[in-house]
Amino acid sequence: MKKVVKFGGSSLASARQFKKVGDIIRADKARRYVIPSAPGKRSSKDEKVTDLLYACYDAASSGESYKKILNKIKERYSEIINGLDLNVNLDHEFERIEDNFKKGVGRDYAASRGEYLNGILMAAYLGYEFIDAAEVIFFDDNGAFEAELTNRELSERLEHVERAVIPGFYGSKHDGTIKTFSRGGSDVTGSIVARAIHADLYENWTDVSGFLVTDPRIVENPEVIETITYKELRELAYMGASVLHEDAIFPVRREGIPINIRNTNRPEDKGTLIVESTCRKPRYTITGIAGKKGFCSINIEKAMMNAEVGFGRKVLGVFEKYGISFEHMPSGIDTMTILVHQDEFVEYEQSVIAGIHRAVEPDRVDLESDLALIAVVGRGMKATRGTAGRIFSALAHARINVKMIDQGSSELNIIIGVRNADFEAAVRAIYDIFIETEI
Ligand code: ASP
Image 1 (cartoon, rainbow, N blue to C red):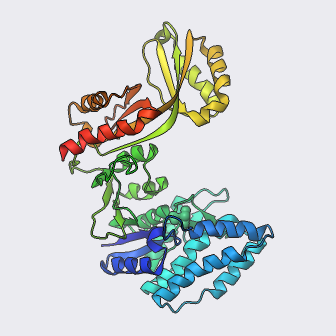
Image 2: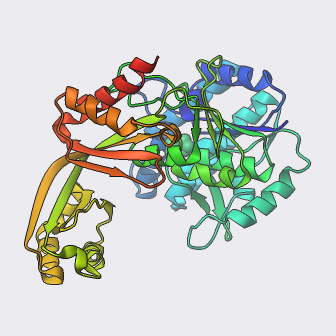
């Protein structure tokens, strides 16, 4: 059994957290490949080392004073070294980093040092081999991740390495320059390593006990999702639910490796298992509810619209011209509605309306702003009658007017549009009807 374990920044923010991580790793022999993030926040007011590194680099490379920030970074690592009694000295590493900052070697290099140094400490603490991610994770000259090359090199490199620490978040281009993934990218590294070693499981340790059915800022103490499929996760993540980096799904998904989201501060919790498909019945009819505010709808009316071939294409062409992506497009016989992100749209509002008039000569174009979209996602909906009925009666009871409904043919999700002002109440009403009343 082989497991890849990734620990997020808050799990490695201090010596105290490192000890918890050490206990977790030692508790299971299968936890052989460890991907650390950089030290994160110790409290809500604290700073992430990655953010300090960016700030330090910006100052150093533009000739401003940077020593104060650099010292803050050094202190973060000293606290861990001293707290764990490690026989490691990072002075040389810091000298090299400082030189490189002054030379202006790049922001990606700067940010990556957070995971690099944490990896050195983690390897020393566990007695595992340290493998610099720059030697095994590759990007092309344009900065695109090279999945196949990386997979080959990494599998080869790890074939005879029993236990290793590989820092998350970065790799290198062919000329040796350091390149990072986007923020939160250690999740991606973990997934890449899991694929390369054909792991049985990719454990992603963070500071929550898995995915919650809905946003805890809206519903107090929501239930944790036990099992979720990649597809469901994509739907929820797209609508704003975030625990895992979006790109972390792809490498393991191709290999059918499950991801288990776990909580470093509550290792006894089972967390959430993310799988390709499952016959485990979801506990409730729905798996999750996510949503976002700030949409606006463009309602187009034209008699006999349905008979006009190419009508939709011409309308969407106008949005394309201004680089606006549309989110949903419910339509009737003589009406078509396009939902877009309000902040993407406002700048081009008048040009788009004029463009639509020119392209399809509609009878009317109306705009409605301040809409929220809610996605109710669940593989269980397919087999259950009356899901939509329950959603809408719950909303009606809560006196919420539904502005739009969209259900894909996959029957994996139902999207509901409501006014921004009704958003929280609507999420609560849907949560209550499916979770509270099914408990
Ligand atoms: N340390 C990086 C960040 O703060 C990457 C990561 O934690 O995954 O975004």
